[in-house]
Structure formats: C-alpha cells, structure tokens
Length: 99
Image (tube, rainbow, N blue to C red; front, top):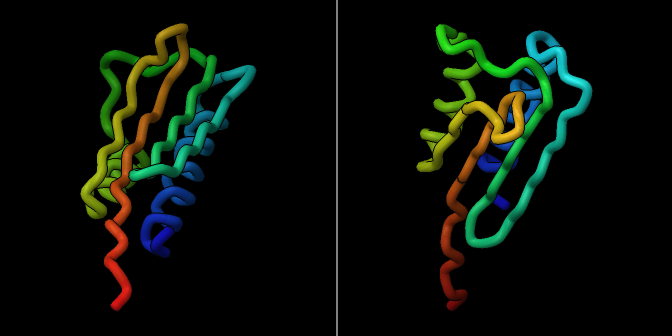
C-alpha cells in the first residue's frame, strides 16, 4: 500500500475514534478495514448519533479532505442501527508491469 494511503487510513481512523470518545457516548465501536482493488474503511459506533443540525467541524472536514486528496471519498452518516458510521473508500494505484 502506498505510504500516502497508509497515512490517510491511519489519520482518518484516529480522528473518527477521537470523535467517538469525545462525542458519541458509545458502548462499542468497530473498525473494519479491507484492502482489495481499493481500500475500504468503515468505523461504526453505537452512540447517540450525529445531530441533524451539526456543523462540520475541523475533524470531519480533515477526514473528507484526506480522502479527496487521494481520489477517494469519506461519508459520515447515521448508522443503520443507531450511532454513527464513517465510510471511506480510497483507490489504490494499478501496478504497472515490470519491464
């Protein structure tokens, strides 16, 4: 995995977990990471969820910026069963044939 992608995954995860600890009042939080043709990162907590009238803070903006800089996406939304879900997709560069 390219270093830029590794750093983005680490920093986005760090910010999401900081948000859970500070705001969510969650009992649990689960982090899923999958690496295939792309990197998929999902962080889900069972906390109080995101207020509808929330302002996008610096942390949420930085997570989105990090993903966007690499051509990916970061969505922060209400989790299906309550709480909050952060869903990140980051493309991986195609390996060029060695020659």
